[in-house]
Length: 435
Image 1: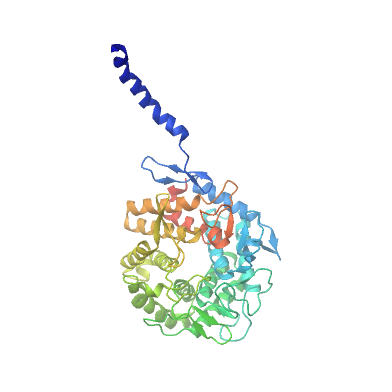
Image 2: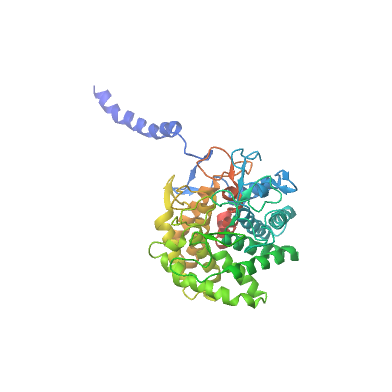
């Protein structure tokens, strides 16, 4: 009995030493989008592979895309699977956002890689060519030769009544002309091809002609308009930033005709839209093409406005720091939640999923704000959010649009074109995150 008692502590000690190892061998690994999650000593999510490697793999995968009428299929088609097959039940497309943000992503990646991948710029050209040749309204009406916000794959060019998703036939979304136009100016600068600039200038003049005085219940453009008659639908359009960017780049090139319109637009943003983020955020309603509830607020527009302020700072807004804080805190209050212990961002009141586009936007803008304010806490949150979306990329470079989806592919804007530029913006302020 003495022997048994004297040996018991040793047995228990041995078991205690063995138990954690045994548990670790049998515990179910944490899997995120097919990858085993990696965490640091404090439990924070790490990337499954370095950002640089993941981005390079994704860009090489997209270089391999088959063509459709001379364009990479992800330029003409919004819904494709991981094998480049169009998703049969989704023929609808979002050409302006998908390719406008795609041009921005590809130009930033070309600069990031110092032009060492000629195919990157070539694909950006094809996105621009698609916008010019295949996705404009007829040369008549209130919005002539203006980018379609939605359409259908297998239509070359898009017909006049190509509205899909929540757009009605003949409807366009004026703010998407801002995205497309601004991207085309950047593409013209990169390629030295005047056709892209000519279309951007035309888009801006169409927007200027249709601009109205904004107030507490109306933005300077409606969310939707019939391109033939100008008949509006949706009193608030939340994304005014890219029209503002388009006006800015044209003013910088000497087109002073846009100064009064630019001043009026900024006045509405500064006196009506930003202050609304301190309360109910009603002037950040409506951005996404597949929704049409007039009061449906979103995170995309305030985050992209905050990005603009963080880039321009005192040159645009002496209150840039406070205003960026107001916008980011509005998003944090209303559009963030936890997944796998990570704070992630969802799109809008009507969609609480952390799609790749919006969550990477959140991570990038939060990183820029963290750098500007020297906040280590916000920097960690931003990095984790971007690490989370990086898990959507598989070993072959094929991204998912949503972490919880079982296979690669889906919305190409959320899988790829509105994602790449966000990682590059974060790397511009925290280059060490790419390693």
